[in-house]
Image (cartoon, rainbow, N blue to C red; front, side):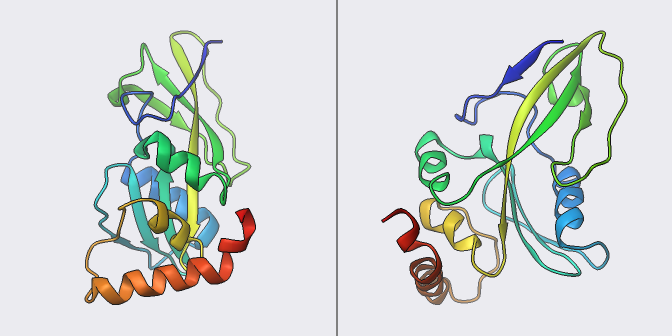
Length: 165
């Protein structure tokens, strides 16, 4: 079995997380039904409002090395297994393991490459401020971006600033 570990540079290191897979991950932890998706300004980053909660689902490969280094001081990514058929092209993705589910998948090992991928989850109450503090990633459609930045900074300072001080 061949396992490939991704380097956090966002450049072609295994298949990127898709919207449908990110939605499935989000609904597993935040509730199914009535899910709304919101566009973000970066490929590999998704925002969902689910029936019970919501937030960002982020493929770690969508982050720069510097962004990743800052974020892991405050949040630990979930690890998941991805298998591809006959190479690493995203069109050949065979299976994504949901890091928050005990459901398993059976597959034949022949002609498969196994990738260890990291996915971050930033819930909508507080943790979203970690992602937005260290990146330019935003869900699109904020009515007042200046007020949003002020709120983001206040939430980060209240809940996370002392963790790494």
